[in-house]
Length: 264
Ligand code: APR
Image 1 (cartoon, protein in one colour):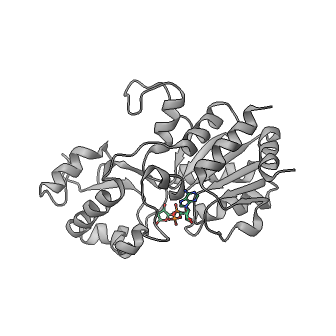
Image 2 (image 1 turned 180 degrees about the vertical axis):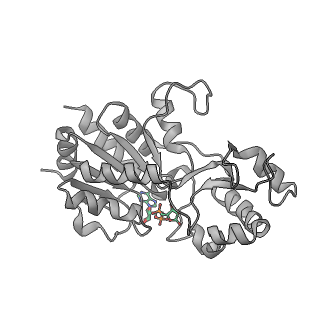
């Protein structure tokens, strides 16, 4: 049996199935990855984007963050065929949730799109079950009062020289993403871990699977009996734990997988 057929069969018969994604799923949309050729961490020092630096030197942190934000999200980008395939699989009940390490918001856009809502429409009915493990770079959050705000106006204020940008309460805004050295939102990671434990089928898509705690989720799923599928251009430390490994472009494999799920 073809390996994708195996994966589709496991998803079809699963009580619970979930997918974890990383930067590789957004690469075909034009968002750079972190590692590998021309990855963001070849051009920026990841040690400058820690939570410790944000607390110690918010001005310098924000200055560097503006450059990183521009490098990552400066160009227009939209969901690609892989985001859309996962969103459709989630909408159709094949996947319980999409867990992502990405902060680009593209899974939510794709979920809204497959449900017929305009991306970013404030009246959108739903944007699917997307668990953003590392937060969302389109928002900022006040480090003191916790208020969340749309990011663009705050990034503009910072670019105009308000460094660091501050909230009405006087607290410093932080991009609403999980920085190195910062704890992941408890409820989100707990839900992700229990989904990995409960899943009968688990996909890892476009991630190097080297950053914890997300990196362990496919292994947790495999140890709990799930059929695990990995789609990534390069090898990952979890490949030996997977039942199916496809070293191919996500925009080829995911629509094909969705097609198999549709056909039966
Ligand atoms: N199809 C399939 N795989 C792809 C594609 C593609 N079109 N393009 C790139 N890839 C693969 C690369 O081979 C690479 O192994 O995607 C992977 C991306 O890996 P990383 O850049 O390490 O991204 P990710 O795993 O999401 O990183 C995890 O690290 O610095 C942090 O917080 C950041 O969330 C991020 C975390």
